[in-house]
Image (tube, rainbow, N blue to C red):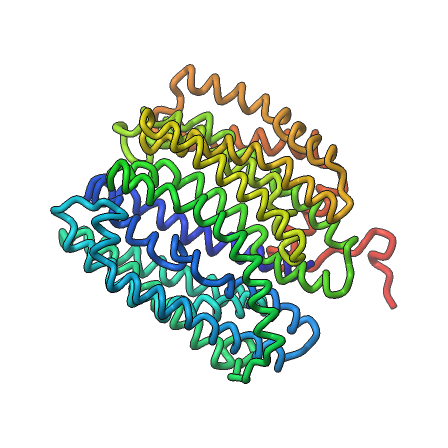
Length: 517
């Protein structure tokens, strides 16, 4: 448990720094290049394996996490190396095929699929072709990253992410000062991602991995088959997640244009940040739950799911709901007064990560169980279909904002089905999940009243006032949850987790404290 808490803290700290750097760059890029060229930069990033091209990774990074975590739990170094070797070998197939398609189809992708304006077509087509070449090392590199996650080397992984983000930010500021074209920003991001993956490969091949050095071992048929089977289950899940996250950008580019992509990304940037942040609370959970499953410790997993869900909503509900109340002020102070009238759409988008935080912990815990993953995938597929049907129906009237209308609706409809699977797997009461959500929402009434008063009086129009009252509303909300929702045992657990994060020793129970040998 201590390792899980520490890894989660590392994930939060690193991702927070990376994301805040990215959020700080958005007003710089939008102010310099405008929504259309900003949309082209976003579209170029969609064509990476961390974007829409993640559809074709065969689920191998996730398979590497699971199987190497399992091998590490049993002390099977040779088995871990065999799994990684097989996953790397398999990853060459999508790397070569997808790279060839993107490189030689760059003009068609740019003109017909993404409907890039003729004035930008040549520069963007070249950018797409170079992105295709970068896929050759990126696909195997993500498998190596998955292996390091399976070994719980999160400090190394997040350090590489932070370094890449800071290098990219410094480069973007330099390019803006030099009045460089938009494609230079996209090429810079591509270069920093290649350097990040290259560093992780170097770590995996040397003792820098923390005493573990991977060597090539010829994979056997059984390990290849198991890797592909689990990868296929994860592909089913990832296809829906990727289309849900990145599909709107492709549709908007084709039907609305690059400026619509830029507007949609701006509105979804903060909710996506919150969603991924809540996901990071569980990114260390897959290898951990795999180890517990391998030792048949369902009781420990049940406690993680129930307490983790409470802590997830406790942590994320206040800033999300307070952020929804101050949507217009957030856009005014972040991007400028011209964007404040889009505040209602930002407020609506904040409901997506809130609903996801309700069941994200349990959903990640069952990812180590293939039968549960399959059932969850079917629910995600239905969620995707509902999302696309509603969004495409409203596209003519609301343009890119149709997807923001459809998003919380689809997620809310699917959430009870996800929770049913979690409850069946771990013997948790569905009524307990419902009481948790209602308790969290009711605890926010005092904060909602304060936020309404602030908006009515206009106290948040200045940046200092906005920051002060946003923090005050969140603090009041957290205090109400702590006092009226969390049990004393939950508060004690939170204090213990905080000690672990800060590197302090856990206090012994009062009954044994002070007793010597």
